[in-house]
Amino acid sequence: MVLLSTSFFAALVAVTVATPAERSALVIHERRDTPARGFVKTGPAPPSRELTLHIALKPNNIAGLEEELYAVSDPKSDTLQFTVPVSQASAMLDAEFAKFAHSGSNQTTIRTLQYSLPADLAGHVAYVHPTTSFTNPFATPKIEPYDVKRKQMGLPKGPATQRKNVLGISGFTNEFANFNDLKDFLARFRPDMPSSTKFDVQLLDGGANTQQDHFSLKLHADKKPGFVLSLASKQ
Image (cartoon, rainbow, N blue to C red; front, side, top):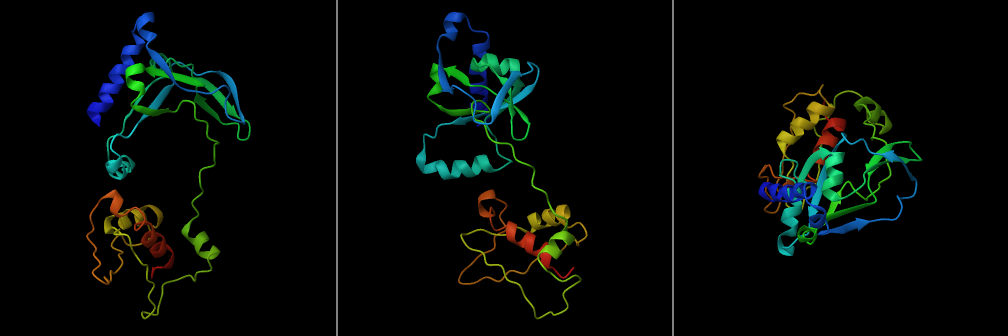
């Protein structure tokens, strides 16, 4: 992926120094006549403002698509992206990046109504972001403190005293809750709890608990123990 990213970047950079005749080989990849509803153009984007471009490639191996999706979803994996000033992004994509204000929130975003790609690259690219896609801004979710959430859910204060009371969390689809991820979760959201806090595992009908540290094996399973232990633990 790193080699592929470098190749695409080199091809796009070549556009910025191409002659007018060579630039005629560019083809419009995406275009819209007007910005999305609620957005108003307020002026050109600052040329020196840095813009991180993400290039989505068209899949050529449907059988391996799921594996690739997991790979690009993992923050540790390589992604096809690079950061350049607006002036260079405009030259690369033959685009006019501008500032657009959202009337509902008064937030400003940088977008373009049209961009182009070299003809020999266009067939391999699904889209480039951020370009012609306008999304409504939304407020950053507020994380309620533990004690506030406990009161909202009607949970008693203080440690659990009945050892016979057990809360079980089922796990299916070959996913495993990871102990190290639980430690990180509690360190962030419940730093008052001991870092050694764990859960017991009961295996049924040939089940397994491999603790493999792979994104696709813990995508959903990791969330439940963290939330449950932080709210209904013995601490």
